[in-house]
Image (cartoon, rainbow, N blue to C red; front, side, top):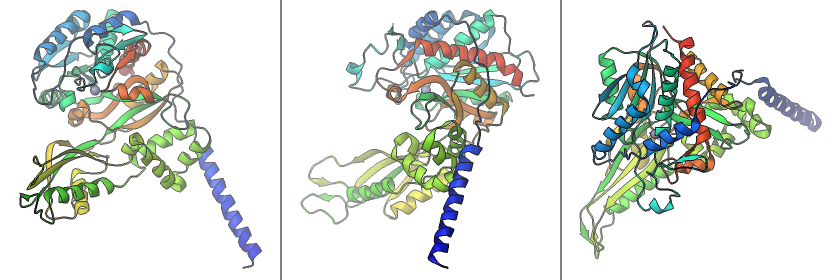
Length: 492
Ligand SMILES: [Zn+2]
């Protein structure tokens, strides 16, 4: 072949490649449902904000070490809900389960329609020691000012719980009855695993042979400016949730004096193992939920990001490298490894015989606990290091389909109440109470109609947690519309 012919061949191959990339980029149209924004849902935002503020004042804190630490506050919280939402408490059946968790049953008109479940939790995380002074307001004062409801729980998760109850209260005032039975579950120990609350409710419903069409729990959000290349707000519906596994990693050796140390110490061996575990993590991949998310988002993007995400067959490795750079996007491309606890030694001149650490893994759907344990053993590659499973664990959830009518219902309602918002499936990287309902439900979604920017994310479980009154009003409108439309997609 002459040089000229070779050049021609290379050029035409390049042209074909560019053509394929462009075709992929512009062939895929928008997957967004075409819906009319809902003109007006009547909500008295200020009165509702005051009711949420009242709920924030009750310190329903979950403590790891004392299960009944806030017992009295939970009882006060229950009485508060009864007073604030009288119609709801007259019409819905209310059961107290596991001490302080609440199960409401709103009987549907069609006994043949499959029930649905809305979930939120009553408990909140404590204020981290030393951060009290960083709050702009007292975190439990229930302050309403500058257009926000401030305080611990205003967002996570009393905002969700009370906006559901606000919606139910107004629908009852309008004489509405749902077609399918609606369960509302308000757990009291979500922040510490939900074993005494949501799990007990799941067992109770299973004993009554309840089968659910779908569950909606707190979850992924409506974010603004977080996804590169997209200038519209994005609502991610959590169609799956990562699993959890904690391994205790420990090393043992002869104890000794620091003046004559052994060659291998327990601390030294453990440190080496931990370094290897952190550096050699489970591989990243853009598959499953992440792939479908990008497929859905790409047509809504502009410029180079659209080209890259529409052509993962070619740019996949490049995109993956980019995603691995940020903590949040890294978390949805792989099973993550986090070193969380190290314990050893208590005297400066004694070499301890024992060193132990906890390593917390969050499992991507598709990676099993067994596979992660095998990976950890391979990476540590030291028979003297003991690996042991510890604490509560769960496999990653199955992935709920986006072709279900319940997914379309959520998607449609989001676009009615938050016009211009792009809806896509997402992955919930933290655990929610909804995982206890997996055995009962055909589909499980994790979504909070809460709008957040990058800067707001640190308020979650953090300092200066707050929710805007405008957003809260939209949340109430969202649940009203969602509940009243649910009958149309009721599953037999
Ligand atoms: Zn929460």
